[in-house]
Amino acid sequence: MFRTVRTSSFLSVRASPGSVGRHSVWFQLALATVLLCGTNSRGQTLTIEPASTLVDHPVVIRAGGLTPGEAVSIRSELEDAAGHTWRADAQFIADETGSLDLSKSPALKGSYRGVSAMGLVWAMRSNGEAHIYQAPHNLGSQNIHFTLHSKTGDATAQLEQRSLDNGVHMVQVNGLLHGVLFLPSESIPMPAGEVSDGTSASAKRPALLVVGGSEGGTPVRRAAWLANHGYVTLALAYFHAPGLPDQLRDIPLEYFGSALHWLADRHEVDPERIGVVGASRGGELALELGSLYPILHAVVAFVPADVRVPACCDGGGGAAWTWHGRPLAYAGVQGYGKSPDLPAEIAVENTRGPILMISGKDDGVWPSSQMTARIESRLKEAHFRYEVERLDYPKAGHRAGAPEIAPAWTGALRHPVSGQPEELGGTPDGNANSGLDAAPRILAFLARSFSTKVPDTAAATVPSR
View: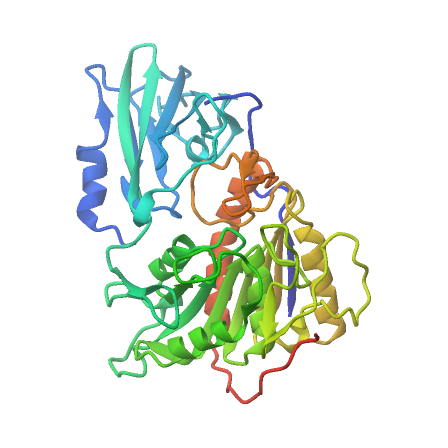
């Protein structure tokens, strides 16, 4: 089954040019009203429910005690991990009851326009210089402050966004492998509503290998997000980290095979339900691993290439990946041709499970939309027998589908390894809305993929050299 989703207008909202700026227990919901709801002497209120939640969860922001038809503004502000202040503001008209609900009430002007429950978060811009938003260090939490301004008074409220559920445990992995293992405790529901019958077999969880891109290091944020939703995840570093190569060059693919089998051997993991998730160069890698290792029964590739791309990021060239000690063929992503026997093409047809691809038509790094379309076409021609889903977002860039609800401005940045300037592309609303739309679709895809166990019978396929 093939699914292509083109989301041209699933939310009626846009950023305004030039503007500056699950486990949440019941007492937190009460605190949202009692402690974090601002009320002044004239009765204006600003509430956020829930007041503390995971970073991918939308909240409900409401205002009350206003004069019907009154024009009011709400401002949001946070300080990111780099110490930069981010702000957004928008103007609204109170309804006939003197209330606002940002999931229904349109912003008439300000940092965004239209209806967006989380517009005051994703539309934030840094104060002064242009910066890229820096998420909390060490998977910490962050507080966003909201202020309601009206003619008759102000009110305030605060939202705490958490990166990691309290029921997820982190284990540092060192030695043959380098990374962080995320283990959901019993307090975290099994994915997709699965229910354990109390036996050791039914208590085993599906697991995901999570790999990053050309930024190197350990992709803990994406792995934490998936662990929050019930998956055992291994955030695996493979370069630009202590004890590993400095550059993405001549990385042996067998390293990732070792990680997959290490995961499968853990007592918490169902070895017949293992998948891989990667973004950018990690998306390319996820597709490559899916073509090589039959142990993988689901592949999620954010903004991937459909070919193996050269080494990165010191300009030295060469192959990024090796197999059995030999460098694998590679090609550039621009205008390389469409020959079906191109040696650098990733053999996605050999994958033994469903594939989900996320892309942005305004990708500033490489043409991920075109490349995922080519992969989809090749799989159709090959009569691929597993589900293929492609989420393609017209206004999104290289961060298409990122699940975190955070400031989505993506101007030029300096690549963390090469130091060169890089434009990620996309508009703030396009990037933000792609994540809001994609996150539940990704979780639903994984649930479907792991609902039926597939026997591990095939042998690994050797890619073209």
